[in-house]
Image (cartoon, rainbow, N blue to C red):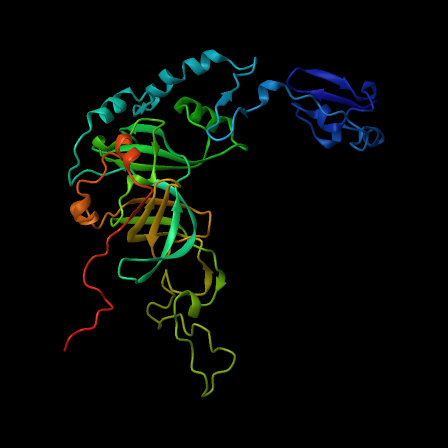
Length: 381
C-alpha cells in the first residue's frame, strides 16, 4: 500500500483511498514530500491528465473593481477572514519602534501650508513630475525658425506619500512620492494597500523627489502641466534606447584600423587593449565592445517651448531619452538655480504649484517668447 507521511500533523495518508479526480498538487499542497514516498504502481493513477474541477475563488480575493470611467472610484476589498486584523492595527507602533523615521499619513499639515500661499525664494526646491513621452514634432517661433521638440504628457500625476526625516535624505529636505498613470489591473496587494492609505487610484509608476518643506503638496493633490512655465529650463531623466551588442566604433566612436596597408578582417576592431610589462594588465573601465544603451540618462537644461493646459502637454526643445510611452522624470534645472532657471517675466514661478483659481483663467496654450533680433533680417552694410 502506498502511504504518505505528513510531517506537520504527524499523520499518514492512504493514497489508495483518494478520488481519481485528485491530482498530485492537491495531495502534496502544504506537505513536505519526496518522490520515493510514492510507489510507481500508484503514480500513474493520480496523473493530472484526469479532468479536475477548478476551485472557486472567493470574492474577497478580488483586488479592486472599477466603478466608473474617467475618474474611477475604487472600492477596496476588506481583509479575508483568516487575516489577523490586530496585527495590522499594531503595525504602526511596531514600525515606529524599529524604524524611527516618521511616515506622514495625514496631509492636514501640508493642506494648511498650501492655503497659506508661501512665497518662492531662490533656495526653494520645487516638486518634479512624472511625464510620459508621446513623440516628436516641430514648432515655429515668432521669427519663423523651426525647432524640433518632444511632447510630454502628464497623466493623472498625484502625490502618493510624504516622508519626513527619510533615510538617505538630507534633514532639511522632505521626500515626496509621486504617482503617474492610473493602473486598472495587475496591482499587488502590498501596493494596493499603499494606495488605499493615500486614497488615490493605483498608479503605474512611482518616483520620489526631494523638496524643501515650503514646496510640499498634500497627499492626493494632482499636478498639472501649468506647474512649469514656458521658457524655463528643466532636467529630463529616462532610460535610453537599447542598441544591443555594438562594436567600439559605434559604442565609443573609435576610428578603427587603417583601410589598407596590411589590415585584414580587422578594419572595425579596437586594436590593442593591453599595456607593457608594467603594469602588464588591462585597466578597469577600458572601452570595449559590449551592450549599448538601456541605461539611465539625464538631459540637462532643456527649454520648455510650449504648455497645453487642456491636454496637460509639455513641449520640450530637442530630443528626450527613451522610446515613446516611456516614463520621464521632469524637474527644474539644477545647474540654473534660482532666477536663471525661469524667464524674467515668470518670476516668481508658480509656488508650490499653480493656483487653481489662476489656472481657471489661463488660456489653453502658453508659448515661450524667443525675443531678440529677427534672424532672417538683411544686415545693412
